[in-house]
Image 1: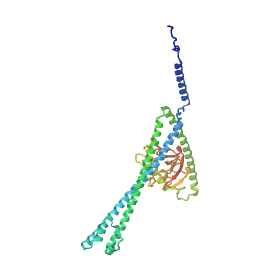
Image 2: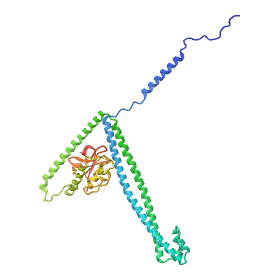
Image 3: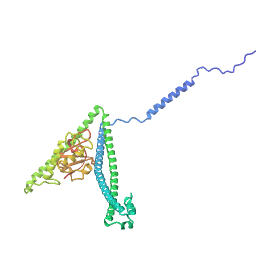
Image 4: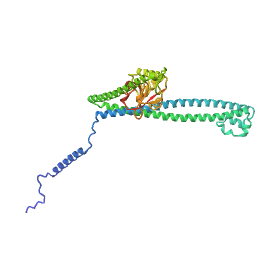
Length: 379
């Protein structure tokens, strides 16, 4: 029997197509990943020391602004708390007086009961809400003039007590809002300070040294400007002294707004107090005696001279007389930045005493260390 032809396909040797396909896919994947890596956004470059300095200064300034907001909210909260306490006390007194009148009316009701006249009058006096009976002419006719006066007093006292309760309620709502603002400002201060500290902590030792050098250059430039102002003021004072014999009639009087022995005497007390605080730490929201923020120091210093200043820089700048930088005198307040978020006490020679910022102590420094907003002569 002849052999049948095989219908099986011959085996193909060297079948490498799948391997080639896998290699192609792998190469394509590598190429794709390489392309994606090449087109991905590059890592953000590390900021320069100059940029770090500007950022840290900005954060401290923002913290200073938030500190003044905190001080304002704290002062408003304290003032509102005093008002609420007074209103609650007044409302309590009104309530006591109302209860006293109610007892007096109750005695009239008891007397009418003993006299046999009980129905409408007794009901009126013993009811929880006697107001509905007030307009009944028949009932009023049964009362003596003294009783009628007691009822009229009761009505008045009810209205006054209700008004005091309403006022106290509204004042409490205002207090709640002030306390909420206080919490928000406190959180803002803490956030800004944390950002600044984090930024500084990421610097290497070399970068910190470079940052310190930038600060020294900034201070040197500020002191140079202070020296120039000191020379100008000294020349002006000498010219005034030379002119004095020609115009002086024998009575020593000062020149300029707020000048004279009275202001000078107060300024001496202000500066004596401020000098005694040098070395104490800046703490935001602090008013002494162990630590201060900028406006807390100026407020305490002027209080030592018998002058009460408001709590915030924004309010202190409105007190007294505005003076130019060229006409500054010891004791004057110098304010900084467009938002008036910092203040120092001028000591003469282009220098001031101030509580600078968190991490620093009360110290003397050139008024040109920060951009000047303006100056005020209190008192």
